[in-house]
Amino acid sequence: MDTRIFSGIQPTGRKHLGNYIGAIRQYVDGQDRGEAIYCIVDLHATTVAYEPRELRSYTYDTAAILLAAGLDPERCIFFRQADVPEQPELCWHLCSVTAWGDLNRMHQFKEKSAQQRELISAGLFLYPVLQAADVLAYRADEVPVGDDQRQHVELMRDIAERFNARFGETLVVPEHRIPEVGARIMDLQEPEKRMSTTASSEQGAVYILDRPETITKKLRSAVTDSGTGVLRSPDKPGISNLIDVLAVIRGVEPERVERDFEGSGYGEFKAAVAEAVVDYLAPARERYAEIRADESELERVFAAGAVKARAIASQTLADVRDAMGVGPPAG
Ligand code: ATP
Ligand code: MG
Image (cartoon, protein in one colour):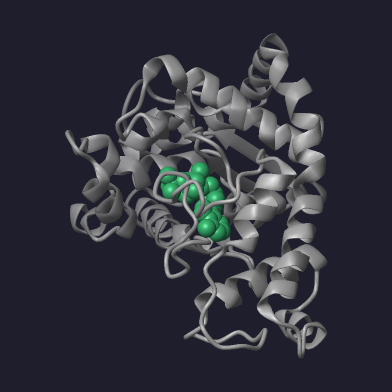
């Protein structure tokens, strides 16, 4: 059987180069490698402060970015999380085999709860359980994500194993798929931090929809370290990050980029990275406006995707209910 691939992406704000390299690029590849299932996780977006009037629009924005980047609803199952109620129901069932202490150790919860000004919601705490349900509902083998999601994938593996041990072999224990280079693109202004939708400044992140001039300006003013030499090193996080970016875009090893720029100054190197990033993001940016403009078509894509997604998720849920003894006996 084909490898089944599942991943979700948040409809919060604009997607950036880190999302593209760490996640979206792998989603597009996944369509050729196996049975690919991708979801815009609008239910996850409500776990932090958000504006209800904007969420639907952000969901369309993110969907249009993914379609513009090359997701093809004929070659993958592409849907919106809230259209598949099996996922939140499975989340509840998985809560019974999730340790409170494990959730309490999640880095993302610590980081995001520190960013909240008012309420730290129970939803934010349970986020990794819903994420586990997203993946386990499809009995996915593989989860393409960036490095920041490593801990959450480990947790969902533990949850699946504990479920199977407690209720009998029901769920597939998934593996993460984290790229070797580009799994953690760093903020351009604070290269010791991850480029992030919610935590990066305007200048710290390159957005997929940024204009070419803006991208060039941001990369030229990226913080680099004192010293010279286009070489990766732990004390040169800024330059190391740009080397990784260029290596991914050119499809070569970072060492190759170092060799190609031997003897070059930072200015020349940054200009080359800027040009490469502009070209890399251009196809998605150029296709975006037309796709985003047609909301009824996006709704149609979501509806068709949800039918396919529910066909899989409802079977898993029926098996889970049966194994747990909740609801009527399986007929
Ligand atoms: P937030 O910071 O608000 O969580 P985000 O930028 O992480 O937002 P998500 O939608 O949560 O965006 O993440 C989508 C995917 O992008 C995930 O698989 C995540 O691991 C990956 N990703 C996020 N940031 C980076 C990054 N800087 N480098 C590589 N991959 C990343
Ligand atoms: Mg994130």
